[in-house]
Image (cartoon, rainbow, N blue to C red; front, side, top):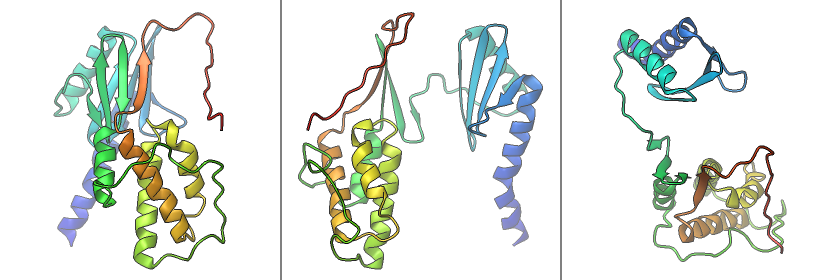
Length: 222
């Protein structure tokens, strides 16, 4: 038991040691996210994101980024994996005109986990004029309730790069406490739509911004 307790404390000890070291090289923790750190030096910035023992470092100055890497490598046993390609289910593809961010593998794994890898597809994530009622359908059995909550939780994470499913996912999220078969059908419909749009994601293009930011919004005309 003592050995297991020490192993359980190991990640916490590592996190405490790492986060205590960052202020010594000029980083401050973000007010909104305790795993996000920022370093300011003159007009340059370096951003560091920590998840257990995985670290992302980026910024506006290559020289400053290199200095941060060197300081971390001198203090910790670390390996530089070069450009970021995959992090917590999020894939980054580098293109000539920008970055493409997606969750293709994550979505694929979710379909397999939900038993819908070979299901038919839908061209929309929900019915037109979707309005789920608390009294709709029959209450789910306990194992189906767990499946429903698991699917919806995974779909929430998928909305990071799939804003097109945000409305439908938010709709089914409102019934996590007492789901029925109607809500499970609605959640599975979102998965069927995801299967038909596996290659969707968010494209960040370079060189398309002007001095005055312009907000563009799109909506379903229906």
